[in-house]
Length: 454
Image (cartoon, rainbow, N blue to C red; front, side, top):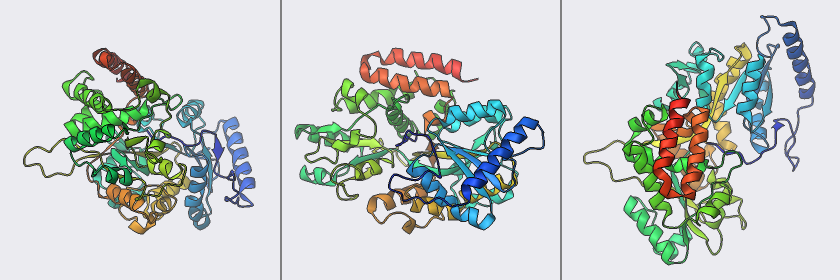
């Protein structure tokens, strides 16, 4: 899951609180004209009214609001200037529900960006989304991505989406000063991780920074733990079977991942009540506090933004750093790099227009991806230069790690059907509240699995 840091609904032309964003003068009039054209088109019920009703306009619905929406407008500004195409963007944190309603009403946007690709499956299988395999310009961008990234947007062998923003998961965050003060080094193995947790606890520092609260999506940070443990302990093939609903939640591979998670948290995470009530984006403030209140956090790449915004303006590489979450020792003779868990936003086409095709191709290309990186986002596009990222060891290190990852797997819960994803969130909360009920929790998840998958 890619969490939102701003829950208000906005459009990309809304000015920021500091006034840093400037609206182009004629854009509002063009948006109004395009909206009127779309309404007239719907009212006439004419089959020839495609896209936005205007060959020079493309509508985009996405999850980005506030600063993210402003960043998106800056990314597409050169595209608008060079093509004459106007991008009408609407951002909402409830994008799944808004998109579903508009698709059902027959008034979808031209393009939609989602952080849960699993929701694309039903659209693809019911013919309500446009296949992208016939866009040669889009295929030409594929050489800049590792093969696993190109498969993320496929449903039943057909390409229906492209990744436009990314996040790297399975990271262990820590404060280098805290570790140095207690003669600790970034753990590279599971045993070193356990030793670090014991040392922090002995020093009076809670080993784990941990929070699960996230409004209606509470519990998702725990799904990241389970996903990372399944992937690193059992490998991509088991992970894929689990995500697709083929592997039971009560199987030894999945059960052992939950048990391993419980063992890690038992070292100290603030207790069930604190974990359930602490917001996911505030849990890590204790890591960079002085004195520190917790010593490590398992979280995705976007956590660096939370640490940097904490009191005292902590500095990347000085006050917080990351290392890959330690995996169990590789089997004898293994040479392949471990698979990495990722997340991000995928963009799909719901109305096939020349303008939509051009924008989608642009967003997948190296120019737009480099602009995303300069705005503080991550890109799996290998053509994005290292200096596109902020000049600090954390940002550039994460960018390099993402580009170098050949074997990746997308966030499992985001790929699962919505009903399964929701049951997974609730199971995390139930397990943290009472770990002794694990077998019953997993049995309930299996019942949800039977109902959620066709």
